[in-house]
Amino acid sequence: MSEQKAIPITKEQPLTLELPDATCRLTLRYEENSHSEKSISESKGNSIKPGGMQVRRYGGKYPEKEPAINFDKKPTGSSPSTEKLKIFVSYNTNDFPEVEQIIQKLKEHNQIKAWIDIEQIEPGDLIRKVLQQAILESICVLIFIGTDIGRWQEIEIDLSIQQGVEEQLHLIPVLLPGIDNIPQDLSVLKRWNYVSLKSMYDDNALKRLIRGIMKSKSR
Image (cartoon, rainbow, N blue to C red; front, side):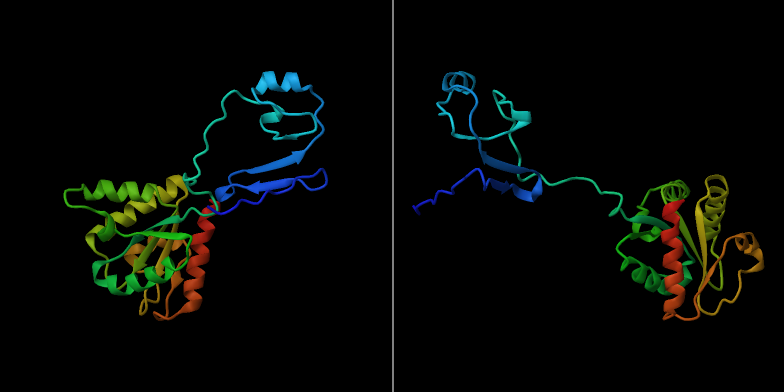
């Protein structure tokens, strides 16, 4: 067994101990004891001579039994600064290869979490109910517009518009490469400013899209 070295504690140099995970700090100070040896011995059950070392805790009081500290316990939950922003992704299945590339780039931004139906809807789920709940829990909806709009995307758009009007949900239409304007049958989406991707490598449009998503946090 290795010999343990004593650490001196003086009035001029108290000893501060950092506990694991910075959960608390313990400071040991040398203090002149104003109590008699008898009174300290009776309250703590130890023999501490006047002028000895005291450990100040709990406002200077000595509880009969100190609570145990679990050093292995990690903080739970996410703080507001680290919690990811949930966005709902509406798209046509035919456009998924392009949409997937864009979503992967968005996921590189560590504050964004994308909700995509093929990853979240399980066999036997009531699709419309799951979609509606996911939109309610999102702060932003990305509506990707390609050459065609599928049946389920129409339902997603209707639910998103209803939620956007009633609850001020942030909607961002995203025009995929080759689409210059919002189609006439989706003219209702023109009330929201859109992002137009000139190519899959349009970094400026992607930065605009991220800014729009981050702005949703303040709504």
